[in-house]
Image 1 (cartoon, one colour):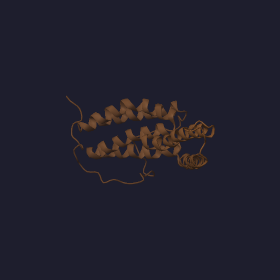
Image 2 (cartoon, rainbow, N blue to C red):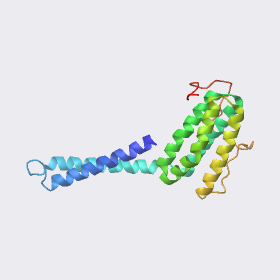
Image 3 (cartoon, rainbow, N blue to C red):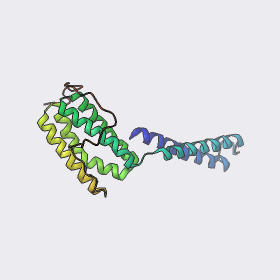
Image 4 (tube, helix red, strand yellow):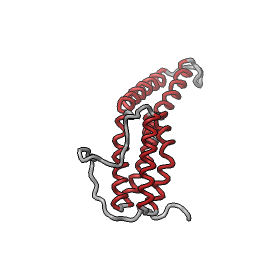
Length: 192
């Protein structure tokens, strides 16, 4: 969430400040009572530059539909990593999923909040199962996450999109991973 939010909000905040400053300068409210023409013109040029940059950012901002395949791929890599006992990869992918929920909120605040609400409990269960390298709990957490995803799709108005743990052979992930048995990246993350 922060990178897109930072890029989108900094120009807006600066634009608002510069606009206010320009109006004050143009209205003779600057120190000395005169509006320095060079300062006003420089500020106008900066505002135009910021508007152009903001237009570029808005043009490349992904849609929620374009965003979801990346989320889905990371979920399935985490799933396969857990199945293979590659807990470091599973832990990494879960961290990415959490980060992507923040990105989702930057893309579409309403859908991102919905997604966060549906997945918070699931992520907690997945994190605990990964941390304890417990395949049985991991599988149960995956099933809970799938149910949460499908409920979220329904709530978002896309009930026809159904998530499954079974990936048909005619579907492929965009970048395959070599999975091997590993321990978690940082060991236990919570106190017992």
